[in-house]
Length: 177
Image (cartoon, rainbow, N blue to C red; front, side, top):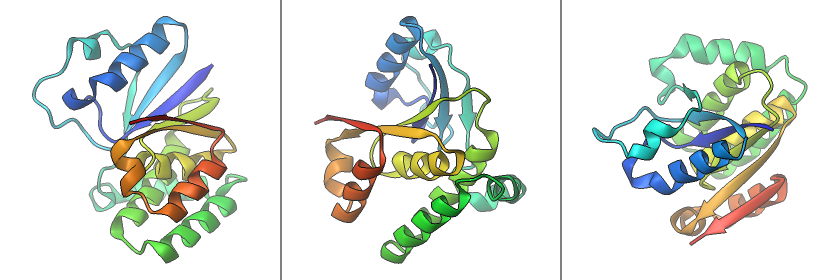
């Protein structure tokens, strides 16, 4: 299978557990593409990051910094069969979370839906908060299944309504706390 893994940032020295998981999946034959919502901020990387073969796609961290890319994403995504469902989901979420971050997640999903490498069969998000929002919206647009890994902090800091709906919508979920 070919899977896109959405991460909040990559590489991150504090998340070597994710890097180890990605590398282990690669050695078992999974074709992985890393999607990062942020550019790296750490000066140092763990040796496992040098072993990972997956290409990395960096989405615009802030939409105003790459408006043309976001506009191109919107133009392409609105033609996808699942765009209406994704927009409806976003509007429902936005009514309960009227934050700039919610808008940014949808904008990043628009770019991801346009720039998702050919052949991706599923999207997996590491963390149930921000990365899962982007994965969920993009998967809806593209008609793909998505899954997530939830960890202690994001489980406890994500509103109950959002946890419930994401768990309901994803193909599968794993937790680690």
